[in-house]
Amino acid sequence: GAVVSQHPSRVICKSGTSVKIECRSLDFQATTMFWYRQFPKKSLMLMATSNEGSKATYEQGVEKDKFLINHASLTLSTLTVTSAHPEDSSFYICSARRLAGVQRADTQYFGPGTRLTVL
Amino acid sequence: GESVGLHLPTLSVQEGDNSIINCAYSNSASDYFIWYKQESGKGPQFIIDIRSNMDKRQGQRVTVLLNKTVKHLSLQIAATQPGDSAVYFCAEAYFGNEKLTFGTGTRLTIIP
Image 1 (tube, rainbow over the protein chains, first blue to last red):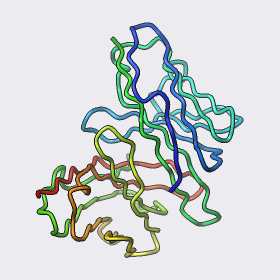
Image 2 (tube, rainbow over the protein chains, first blue to last red):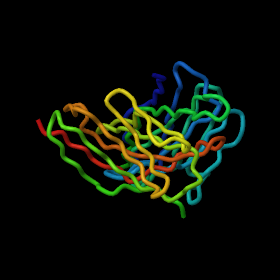
Image 3 (cartoon, each protein chain N blue to C red):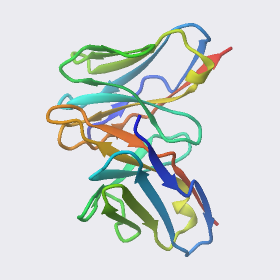
Image 4 (cartoon, rainbow over the protein chains, first blue to last red):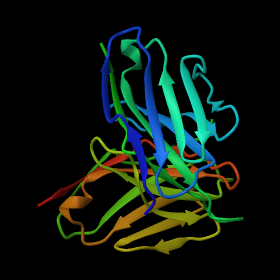
């Protein structure tokens, strides 16, 4: 199956600092990537859709100035949590969409996730 | 708003038995549905999907059933193994949009 990587897998930072998380599709090109947030024992919550070469589309309630997304190439999207606070601590997961063709279900492949802990 | 949900939050099954994980959805306009498996500390892993114009699809040891009349989706895992222990999510999506709406998840525990 397709491979999506995330880096780092874990990060601990002080309150007020910014943290960048990378999401890479390793064996296919992805014009669209997605960023999710997951709290313990909860489902995945879509934060934003990352579009290569254009601005990300944020879900309602997600602060775009807080969670900066850049999709600079067909294989890389980055999520920067700016001025992180303890409430930003969470498991952040990206996915990359591999196109299947017209009227066929695209498949989203997920990265392994990044555990962010803000002290 | 529209949502995808699960009937049971936890399920324990004896190793070797079959398991059935259920999901109720409310958006009848969704084009396809997907099942994901998530192990602890990892990202979701694609298991199987089914288009809305189908009612059954089989994979390796897994079968997904779709009942559009009652808006119900199920994942059947045959001859469960310890490695099947995980949280299983159903999700729905549209062609051309591809944003996934996830259900709440069911934790499946395989008892040796």
